[in-house]
Structures are given as C-alpha cells and as structure tokens.
Length: 496
Image (cartoon, rainbow, N blue to C red):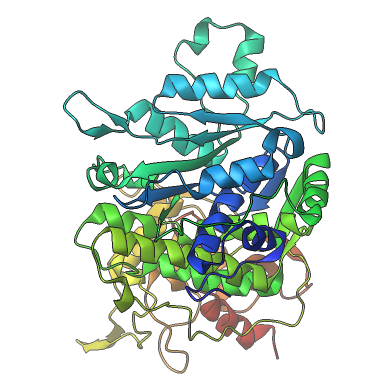
C-alpha cells in the first residue's frame, strides 16, 4: 500500500505500479485513471448488483483537478496511451470531449456505428476534457440538458434526445438502449472553484470521484506498450459474454459499513456543494470493487476488494477537502478502526444490503436508547409519530410483506401499521427510529410480532412454521433497515 493509503489492487494496481514513476501519489492517480478506462471498456457486458432496483454498470467516473503548478493533462493521457485502447480494448470507441448534450449524442452515435469484434453489444465511449463550458462572461457552465443526460448514463438508464417522436421506430428503439459512457475528466482548478451549483446539481457532482493532482514528478519511466497479460485475459473474459458481479456474504458485511457512512458527516464543509461528493460513497465503493473483481475474472466481490475500493474513495473525499481548503489532515478514516464481524461463508449471494435514509435522525451514532415513558392516567411509550408517518409514506400504506393496501373511506383512505423489528420496551428496549420500523398490514404485523414470520440477513421473508422462503422484503430506496434489529428479532424465534 502506498504511503498515502490507497491499495493498488490486482492487475490494475500492477499496471499502475509499472506505468508510474517511483512517486507513490502518482501511482495512485494512474490507478484511478486506469479504473475509469477499464470500467468503461467492460460496461457493455458487466453489471453489478446494487441496493438500487435493477443491475448497474460498474462505471467509475473520475475528474482530475489540477492546480496552477500541475496542469490536469497528466495521468489520464498517459494511461490512455499506455493501454492502447484501439488495439486492446476494442469495446471503447474512442475519447470524446463533451461540453454539451449535442456532443454527448454524437459520441454515443459514433460508438454505435462500429460494433466490437468481441461482442454484439454496443461499444462504449470515454468522455474526456471537462463537462463545464466557459461562457462569454468568463464563468464555467454545466448545461441542464447535459446534466440530466449524464446522470442517466451513469445510472445505466435510457435517455432520449429531443425530437425522438419524429424518428423511425428503429431509431426510437436505439434511443432506448442505455449508452455506455465512461468519464475521465480534467478540470482546471479555476473552473472547479467557480463551478455552478444549485439545488439538484449535487446529484450530478456526486456521480464522479474528484482527485487533486499532487506534485506529479517531471521524470518518469517509459510508457509501457499495453496492459498486463492478466488484464488482457480479464478483458476477454469480461467482454466475451454478459457477466453479473455479485457481493459475497463477507464483502456485503463490509460494504454495509461503508454504506452507513452515507448518513454521517464525512466532510465538514461550509459549502453544501462540496459535501455533495459524500452522498454516494457506498455506490462508488461498490462500482470500484466490481471493476476490480472483473479484472480478476471473478463474478464475486470479496472483502479485500471492498477494502481496496474504499481506500480509493477515501482518497477522493480527502482531496475534496483539500480543494475546499479544509484541513484534510483533520479527517479521520471512519473505517480505519472498524472491525467487521463477517460470516465464514464467503460464497456468492444475492445480497440485499440495507438502503439509506438521508436524515439527521438516521445518523449511525444516534443512540439506541429505550423509548422514554410519560405518566398520565396509565403509563405509555412515548413514540415519535414522525417515524411512523415517514415509513408509511414511503410505502403508501402498502404492506412490505404481502403487498396489501387496506383502503378506507375519507378522510383516512388507507390503513397500515408500524411494526417495530426489535420490540419496544423491556426486555428488548428497541429504538423508535425508521431503521427499526416496517410498514405492515394487521395480519402480517401479528405474524411478525408472534414469530410466525422472520427476516434473513438478506431481508428475505421466511415462514417460521414451514421454513419456506416467501420472497424478498419490499424495501424503499431511502429506507435503511439495520441488520442488528433484524438479527435481534430473529434470535427470539428462529435462532434457538
């Protein structure tokens, strides 16, 4: 591991070591750039399971921000030349500067015109330069149309160009195919400091990892003539057929610790636009880990891949702090001292990891204290009605177990019940917070409270009487369910 803390993992790490000079920081930047190029090359055929609906491309977008002494045209150009894309990574159509949505459409169309010799899937395109365009007033601008299209491309979603209704049915069908778009940007520090920001822009900026170029040495080794043999073999494996990369059970436990950080304040920044880069640390870590797994021809993400992926994401967070003129040395790696208990079975699994809820009350350090009591005529648990309202609103009063919605006449319209996973009150002393609450119909609520139904760590519903798997729990994208509460409930009924 270099002195700065990034683990250079697998064939991509070896490539970075061989290509870079002896300076460790330069090796990290070569490594980050190689990951972006590699993830773009395998995007047409490799997908990763996420907590979000559907499969996602393992795209790792980066942006190198150069200061006045270090122009940003450094590691990305040397990586692209050394990998010799046209010869070795034929699924990448080429590099295209994109500062407008018209440029993006042209780049995607160009990639579609030349099918890869390895696969019938669409070729991908690697975006370079910068997504920001300077206006006549001398200010950088991010076009709203480009913002929207790039966000969809990162998600692996379809986007349709203007005037699609006038195109032929074949053309419209082509427009429905998600573009495979990678990004390896170079952003001038002046543009970075003046970059446009308004509510909603954080959804775009949080989709790439910024890296501050740090004192690149002027001397260097001769650029190697191509990727390592291991990487060439891995590319043939990845692009030869459709691949689905999954989290192993042990890796899922580690990744859950990273995802919990999305609810914490990783970056104490005076500007919300800088804090925006911490919103998707879990998804970034997952995508980097999936790209690393593919580089080792593995359909399973292992724990060491999560560790290596997080080390790169953590470097990016510290770089954002530096760019925001915050003392990054005061930031402490939240996972540095974390010991994660993992099961011994590290085989692949269709793991559903708890989703995230971005709200102050969901912070991981929020104390799990017993619900207080107040004395009236009788003693009653002082529940927070906001928790119940939030959970019911997420599911529109629809049962997470069976999908039942009990419709009522006005003014109620529908009825559901808030079921606590770890029960309130002694001896269980469960907390009254959204991570410990399910939205259930009355029948499923009784079954759950009485142990007739319980949940696995993968959030699958099990019939306690028969042991039958009844299917996955319905989980809203913003509802993070804490596994410690699930395990406590299950220990009462299933783990005896």
